[in-house]
Image 1 (cartoon, rainbow, N blue to C red):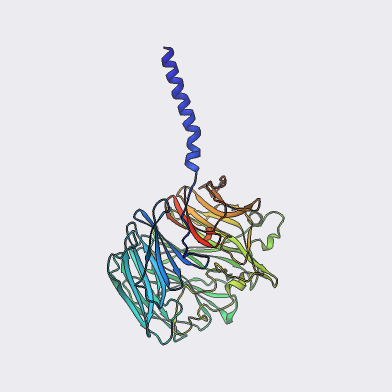
Image 2 (cartoon, helix red, strand yellow; image 1 turned 180 degrees about the horizontal axis):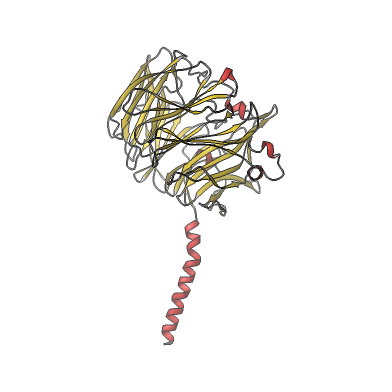
Length: 516
């Protein structure tokens, strides 16, 4: 009997011990670092492709030296595959990653012709087929920026490559090529779009799971900040025409940068932008319109005015509430399964000896096509408002600031459920690589990773926010190596519970895998 009681007592103690340990195990993060490669320095251009098979692939470019580094799950370098088939006059490369392979779409120029090619790579970055010619363009100059843009649907079953010829500023010629997941051409179309020279702007371009192209177009009267018209533009995968739908035309409130998100589950398109009442006025609130694809009409349009409580959250109770949102930019839109959504916005600005740069300096200082691309072809992703900063940009007199992150949660009827703010203060001189944040979506929580100085040491912090809006400040991540500085805003989520974040180690570029 005594022996039985001891066994029961031991089992109870074991259960209590496991219950005490389990929360620590479930919330712990593991960081694994790659070794620095001598070819990779601060000026190396890179793109984190993702996890392909059992390996992690990262594309790297050092001038005309192109390679893909292949890492195993422990971030040990398995191979550095030279991409010798990228011509010396290569222009750009894009990737569409899948579970066991990746499509690489690249562009290069030979004489007066720009070639757009596709090649399938395996988990070891080895070619699975000969490069396939997707399209060509004859030009009369040496191209320095990409002509073709590659976008793909959330389920990766539709891939679209397109180009825009702006030789005639009154009428742009769009060429779209729609492929399936095997990079087999489904449709190639040519369409003209009427434009008002220097007054028409585009949003980001997206493609939904049905192969329909989606983007927005808006106008600014006489070059002012006033948006006179915001249109939803769609092109069905099999149709050679654009469909125009008016969205924002009730008044002349000034809209900020317009963000688009596709809700494939509910077949909706979400347009969001901060707005203000007058030219160079203060940010007043959030404008949102939901387009129902099935009904081919606006499901709901709303303007959420930011009240004093939100303004106190965004900037603190002692701040000037009137200007609380003037340096905020929308960073992410996360769609919920029921049609609701989350919007995150971050406070970002720069200061210099010449003064503070505000949002109008970032958003409206130039036309998106009055760039070096203004020869005949224009890439929609070459635009001054896509990011106010450069990765290694700026003179020594420029200081980059990234502060609080506001999170707003809406239900499917666009009613605000809750709001909260992740408080932080970040700044750096010369470069913005170490400031701002990255977002990790684990399904049950959103993790925000960002650097904070603690005792003169730059440490990576993890704050998460749950479905109820509650913020959890996790302990400083373990296995933070001395001398390694994270660049979180350039990181990429590669699985349901892990992401890759680039790092600086002295003058070298390395990478860290963070597992949640």
